[in-house]
Structures are given as C-alpha cells and as structure tokens.
Length: 597
Image (cartoon, rainbow, N blue to C red; front, side):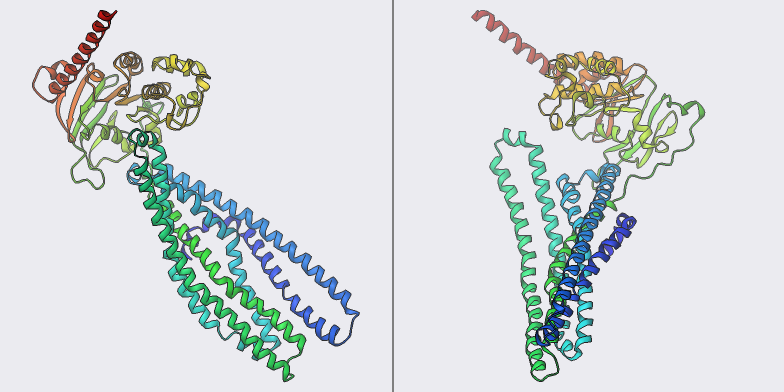
C-alpha cells in the first residue's frame, strides 16, 4: 500500500467523507444479515409453525430494511463520487504544477503522449479505486467477517465445513496479485507509447503528408498497437488462469454446504428454516470469494497507475531559488548594465563533449552581440544558460556583477524577452498570443508592438483582425507570420535583455529588412544577443562571436572579420555568392519575360 501512502496528502483532508461513505456501505451490508433471519422465521414459524399473523410484520420489516439499505447505498455512491472527483482534481493540478516546475533536462527525453496518459487514464484509474473500489474492497472483507460470524453462531460445525476451501483461496489470491500487477504495469507503459505515437503523428502531420509517409506511420503505429494488444493479452491470461480457480473454490463451498447441511437436517440437528437461512448467509462468504479476483484486478490497475503518477510527482523540480539581497539602487526594476559570461563550460546530460567550452563575452547596456556558427555549435546554449534553463558547470554568468544564480528564475526571466527559432503560438486569439507574458496591456500597445514587428498589416487582413483565433501551434499562418507575432510578443514586454534566436530565419530578405528596422527600436537601451545563421542579421552588431563545437574561434566586428581569412569570411562569401546568384537568376527571368512581351 506504499502507493496509497504517497497519495495520502491528496485524500486525507476528505477522510471524513471517505469514512461516511465506507460506514454507509458497511451498514448497508450489515442490514443484509436481516434477510436470513427473516427467512428463518418465515419457514420455521410461519410456514411450518402456522403463525400466519407474522406475515404483515415480516413484510413491514423487509420493506423498511430495503428502503434503509437503498438510502445508505445512495449516500455511499454520492459521497464516493465527490471524494473521487476531488482527489482527481487535486492530483491533476499537482501533476500539472509539477510539469511547470520540471527542468528543461527532463523535457529533453520526456514523451508528450506518455505524460498525457498519466494525467488522464492513470488518474482516472486512481479516482475509480479511491472513490468506489476501495470501499468495496473493504466491504468484501466486512461481508466475509459478518457472514462467517453469523454462520459460526448458528452452527459452528457446518460453518467450519463450509469454510474448508478458504486457505486455498487465499493462496490463489496472493499469487494472482503478484502476477497481475507487473502485467498491468506493462499495459500502462504500452498505452503511454501509443499515446506518444499518436501525439507525435498529429503534431507532424504536415511532414507526414509532404513525404507521403502515411503507410509508414500506419505500420509504425500498428507495431505499437500490437505490442499493447500483446500486453493486454498477457494480463488477460493471468486473469483467465486464476479466476476460474477462485470461482471453483468458491463453488465448492456451496457443494459442501448442500451435502453437509442436508445431512444435518435429515438427522435433526438443524431445522429447515435454519438450513435455508444458513444457505443464504453463504452469499456473504461466496460473494467475496467470487469478487476477490475482480477487486484485486481493480486494485492492481490503480496501483500500476499510481506508480506512474507518483513517479511524475516525485521528479526533482528545478532547484529552489534563494535570491541574495540586492543593492538598494537595483531593487526597483534591476537596471541591467553589464552582461558577462566568464569561462563558461557546460555539458548536456549524456553527452561526452561540452556544448560550450571556456566561453566568455561582455556586453554593456545597449550593446548588441551576434553569435553565428553551424548547427550544434553552442549558440542556443548561451541563451539557455542565461535564462537558467540549465545551470552553469564551470565559470559564471553575471548581470551587473551579480551571478544569475542569485536571481529568482521568475524575476530573471521577466527581464528577458526571447524570440525562439522554433516559434510556438497557442490556440487562442492573435491578441492573446501577443500579450502572453505581459499584464494590463492596452490595445494601442498591442497594435504598436505588431507594427514594429511588421505584423499589423497581415493581421488587419484576417477575418477578425486581432480577435482571429489561430489553430494549434499557429496552424493557418505562414512561418514568417508566426515569427512576426512572436517578435511582437517580445516587443510588448518592454524587456531589459533581448535574445533573438534565429528570429528572422523564416522570413524573406525584404521582410527581414523591415523587421530589422523595428528591432532597432526594441534594442535601444537594451542588451541584445542575436543568434543567427544569416550574416545580414548580425553584421551591425557591436561584437560578433563565431562558434564551432562550443568554442569561440573568431570574434570582432563585421568589418574586421571579413578582412581576415577564417570561418566568418567563408560564411560571408558563401551566403553573398548565393544571394548574388539568386538575384542574377531573378534578373534573367525578368529580361526573358520582357522579351516575350
């Protein structure tokens, strides 16, 4: 029961409701003991004894018992439902809050579909068990105790004979639980794989269709679906191998009762009414035996789900912030001046070579730093370390001489606006996407930010303008349009530090030129880091750093770097030769068109 001990904080505050629910069920079960007694009186006193005047009294008692039992079962179901739903609400909120607090390193390997499975089907399994099945599980035990006690009171010899198969049943039940739990754990893992595959396929549907890989994706999903089916069959086979044995042992009790009880009646040691009453009491014994497999099945299902939920809840969150007292002159708004990386080295988890090695730079307030290099050169790692998405291993990053590790992450990130290379927009209105992360923003400020990002014109052409709801991940907009909305989102926060992570990679040269004009306004009086693959994005930077495999191989201004042989000059020559060739082709096409006219 360790899983449910871990979950105790989430249901313990409603333990009173749980207790009322269980007591209601137990009382309803206890009322069932009245039926055998009524049968005994009906047969021995009324039918055989001829006391027909008792019939109306017995009927009234029976009706009262049925009404009271129904009321108690209603109370159990109503309260159990409230307890289960309250538990699931708290657990789902806890899981969601934990997802917000987990470090970036967790999401490097986590599967979205698996996390969704934990927050839906796994939590529902726990809700059903805590809200209903737990009480039923306890009730089965109480039924057995009540029934056994009543049978022993009526005729202890016959009771002992009837319970003869009980030890064997207990052994089978224990063996069943040990085998069904790992089977259900594998079923849950397989379901997580299916959810991950479906989520990944839906998110990448444009790529799937573009490369005509529908059949390949069907085959890949079918393989996971087949794995899930096999895990389900393994769990069902465990059930099928054990449940018939449990049912057989339960029915043997009935056979023993009929044989022994019949002999007791024949020899006069038991009246007919007592025998019928005793037979009806076996329902209190046999029913728990029949249902023990079912409830163990529900218990192990909830246990397997609980393990997965607890695993998520127990994942280490980002380290707690313990901000040092800041100088009085910096407490209001933190007037950022100098941003400095000093000998920073960092490895991603599981990678032998460093993503950054002995990286240093210094940027004064209002200065622009450009970072350029190939894929995997470490450019984006600079941004991740600045925002404390990961912690520096060696060296330090300081703002106005204060190590970023001394800032609260929330406060630090409020001062930084980032435009990522991979633009993410939410399924909401364009206005909501622009104002995401900014509070109490006027419509005039939204429009101004959109104008600076060169987004206002195309937004105005949409059916509802700024109130147009865009699809999930910005579907329905071009890559350049999405990126311009993301840039407007950065404008509206009025940041102290601006980080542009290849922010104009999805726009054409003309749009990039227009956006650059707007970015000049954004960068005024702010420290700016531009991560780019196009030289046109960083050529006006105060200092350009060329990275290769995490190492700075060149640094200087644009004019200095193109004047000496090296990686930067090679990139410049390649990009501008390609640009010249494209312009020549365009000019040739124009001349050909004119000749045809």
